[in-house]
Length: 229
Image (cartoon, rainbow, N blue to C red):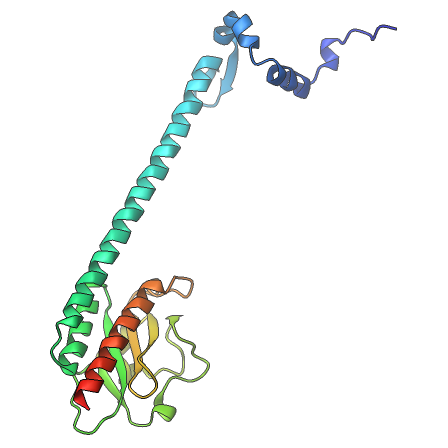
């Protein structure tokens, strides 16, 4: 028994789509339709199938261009970061004394890493005279950061921090901080970076770069401590 012939009312969009998918040569056999078919367009009323295909290709090309430019921009940014890390490492390595190391670190962070204020907490040692950003920990167990602050820490200044003691006149402008542990328990302390921009050290940012700086500084700090003993 023959199936009844389908009328136009029985043919839905999915059937048309399936047919065209199953017959990719359809428009090759009906070339006149390519130029005759009109597709609604928000700005130009209607356009031909060829024009629509060209628009799609142009949009894909623009998207690819955007992605390529983003990759190039990211590569340039990463290279700039690596260059700054290299400059910092060389400058710190050239420091002839512990005092010079501390001052060089502060200068480099301010000049090349857009840090508005720097504070360094170090254990107190007899006869030590440090540059102004250094704050000695006379009792490391009492003066060190509370257990609730885990390093590396990024975000708004913790309520437990005495910003005035750490950053002096700049304290009122501090909107975000990065807190990093440096060195070991005996010879180490904390490196505290502050920014006037609350977005600068957001809590959801990565800490890889800052951790590298802290590890580099900690290694050189231990070296200078050993030389001074």
